[in-house]
Image (cartoon, one colour):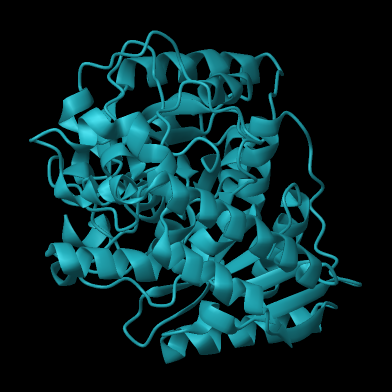
Length: 459
């Protein structure tokens, strides 16, 4: 039997509104699945059963009275443990912050309460939300459900991605500074939306680099992502799949450097699908992208912003070495930072002009599929893999684009491949439109619904 958490919000909503499923029954089933299988998956750091069941009972009473808050009404979800939950620790993935007890719920939780969603627990994060691989030596690394062996889940929203991909919850929230929603979404075979930075209220969220931080959903379908984004934004985006008149570029450049053959093929085939749906697809070369990547390799803009905020934690003798890369900021002189920012501004201006004729870009979310955890256990291996997996996602984040990763195929080793759709800041409606058209025209979402080595087989 497929866990209820493996179903889309749309499927669960139909069952709730038809009366064949009650909010309490759904929530209890989700809590039981978490209790039974989290020991294997290491997705959740803590669970809120009393809060969840009380909310479920209240929301079912509303259904019984004919009240309906919309698509999220009665739907359980999880949230990355960098978000405040009243009365509980917000440790941001490190034991050094266990004493950080939240006085009230984060702004996004309040939004989801108003929409009728039911919070069931905190999910594991990489320390300080500052690593892209998802590794956490203190609390354990969440288990990518696509392999019986330990493979990288991606991070830093690792627990949220694993919880959704394995069917423990229908959706979860994460944060994305350089790829922390999109990378785990791609490696775990689900949808991950990274809106324009700052568009969603980050009050009550532990920051990494505030100017780059974004909040978004991880879900089973693009339609679910649309509904969650609407709830967080307090607006309504139409669910249209018409791509007529759109000009979409396949931007090769550094985005395709070192890409595995299966990943390259999947992205090019995705472009063909979008072309059959009415979009004009063109292959484009943008030198400014390569120049931005070269600048990224010289200067970590995330470290420049994050290290002063988190210095006490990063430099603590008991800090996890996976976040020590933030110390790079110490190596930069004031003159280096000033020159880097000037060069950055020049590159961005060139890039904006070059990209103007296009509505969107499509590129691989990650150049490779999920690698084994064992390949990233040394500092050098961790740094190299982090640079590779975050390259494509960080480039667009520095430009200011919004983006979304959607499943677009599998590798010969049966691991998910992610297609990333980029558009200019504030164009979330556009990327959701393209992603929904692609998802509707293909069967990839259904193929990802039950990972072969999920907890069902391996617990």
